Each structure stands twice: as structure tokens, then as C-alpha cells.
Length: 186
Ligand code: K1U
Ligand code: ZN
Image (cartoon, rainbow, N blue to C red):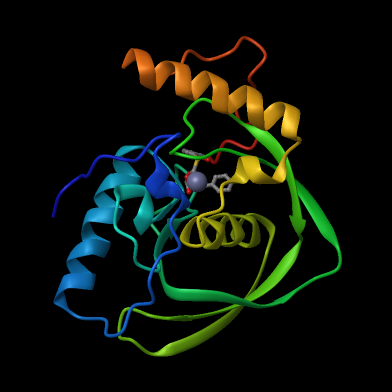
């Protein structure tokens, strides 16, 4: 098990469409172990395999609050099979776009089909933070980032800052007006 480096904007690999997992074998289970190590260390509440440079359709998540026991969840080949017409806005963050948070509107509820760790097909109906996080992570495996859901003006500003920081080999400087997530878990 190992913590891996997280790809940061503007890394082009974040725009790849990840490949379906054929069999949930030893290699995929080792990848999932590394994803949890990386996600808990960050810390984050979700992670898609492509964020550690592996273009496979694998997502890890843990939405437990600070004072609650860990509640790891794994979604292999997740796909949205139904989305509500009703929308909900949530202030999102992304481990690949550190220190930037912005409100994103998405369907408030979704049904998601996926394979579990045993390779068995499952379907869940999600709402609240689980629905938001699932849609954010499924976007990642399709090469979509949460900044693609905000205004072009804001997206271009974020891209400019991250490109500049990458060129200088420095971490991006947080903007005074960038908000901390108001939905801190715990
Ligand atoms: O996919 C990712 O980049 C992980 C991302 C997931 C996410 C957060 C918020 C809305 C949608 C999806 C994060 O985990 S960002 C970090 C974060 O939100 C957080 C970290 C520690 C405690 C509480 C929240
Ligand atoms: Zn993200």
C-alpha cells in the first residue's frame, strides 16, 4: 500500500477518458488500496484513479464525519442511470485543483450502477453530498473537471493561475477571495 502523487491542473492526463475495468483482480485491489492511502492523506472525501495517473474507471470515497468511524466506499465502472430534474448547488473542491472552491449546480439525486469490490453489479440511489461527490468523481473518469461547470470567466482565471504556478514550479497561491468550503465535514 502506498500514497501516490495527485495530478494537479493543468496536467493533461486529467482530461483523459478512463478505461472500463474488466475484472476486479489483484491489480485493481492494489490500486484501490493506494487510492485510499492517497485520499485519506490528502485529505479528501473522494478520489478517481485518474487523479493518481491511472486511467481506469475506479472511484474511492469516504463521507464519514471527523468524529465517526471510517466508511470507505468503492465504485468500479460507475455510471449514472437516472438523474433528477431537481437541482442542488454545492460548494465543491477538488484535490487536483487545490485551494479553490466554487458553487456547482447538479441534479440533486442520481441513481448509479457500479461494480463492488467482489465484482458484483450494484445500483444505489443517492442524494445530498453522496450524489454530488458521485457526479464529481464520475466526471473525473470522463475527463471532466468541476471548473467545467462554472462560468468561463472564473474557469479561465483558475486555469491562468494554475498554469502560471506550474511554469514556476510552485504551488498555486490561494486568492484572498477564494472561499474555504463552508460544508466542512465534522
Ligand atoms: O475528487 C476530488 O478531487 C476529491 C474532492 C471530492 C469532492 C468534494 C466536494 C464536493 C464534491 C467532490 C475532495 O475531497 S475536495 C476536499 C474536501 O472537500 C474535503 C476534505 C476534507 C474534509 C472535508 C472536505
Ligand atoms: Zn476532483
